[in-house]
Length: 142
Image 1: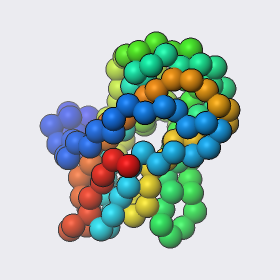
Image 2 (image 1 turned 90 degrees about the vertical axis):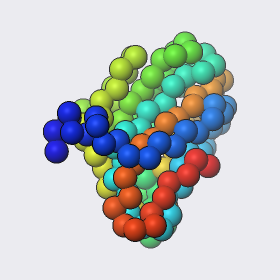
Image 3 (image 1 turned 45 degrees about the vertical axis):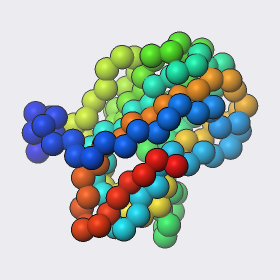
């Protein structure tokens, strides 16, 4: 599948409303249930200017299995409208005002979480698109 095909078939869209960034903890963003899904895009948008966050990461937290890092990023002092998009290169995010949706990711049941290593001000909203790989698989915002 090339980028053009994927741009046409992003699948179901799930929005997570703006919320305060987690404070030195993990915050569930989305829950996957009913089977495996193909994540076709995932991005966060700053809605309230962020403080100095030295490290944030999005992780896949399967119901059965090991947590693994999808991406690491610093969202330090960013203004509303600033976006980070997964997937970037390796485990880095694409930063700025555009995103990439050319690398689908297959995840099984569990949650997609955002973790921070410090308490920090700011808020972000999140958007995810997916296609169910198994019949009945869904993703909802948490």
